[in-house]
Amino acid sequence: MFNQLTEKDIQKMEEEIEYRKVVVRKEKLEAVKDARAQGDLSENFEYYAAKKDKNANERRIRYLDRMVRTAHVISDDSADDEVGINNTVRVYFEDDDEEETYRIVTTVRGDVLNGMISNVSPMGKALLRHKVGDRVQVMPEKGEPYYVVIREIVNTVDDGTDRIN
Image (tube, rainbow, N blue to C red):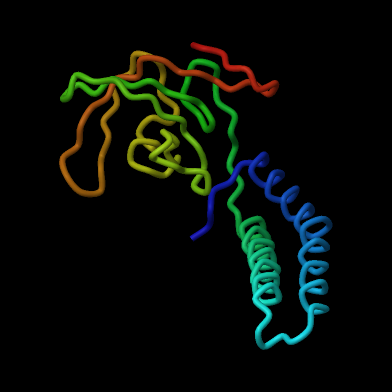
């Protein structure tokens, strides 16, 4: 399965790859050299810790590179009055008489505990391309479908500010 990423997600990943290759890799290699110079490697905890850190950096580079190479690029463009990627949405749950706020993000950035839901999650899929006032049916993988009403959409503008619709 491909991960759905926006151009901005890919750009951030490529920047991290470059930073890790140019800056972090050099620091980790230097730490391994310094630890190796301390003598007997069989009892040198610093050497093993430095090698572990270096290897973790290399794993992260490979992971990010694989994500970029296999990504399915999706657009984060949406009309000003409809839900799209990177929009924050306040929804009303009819059955519970409660409101919740979610930010719709791509698959790699989903973090439910912090209110960031993936565009392929049941709630994310249901909300995309709908407008304020729409009553939307959410179809969970298990359990009964339920309805939410979109109360507010906040579009993130390129300069980092938010615009409420």
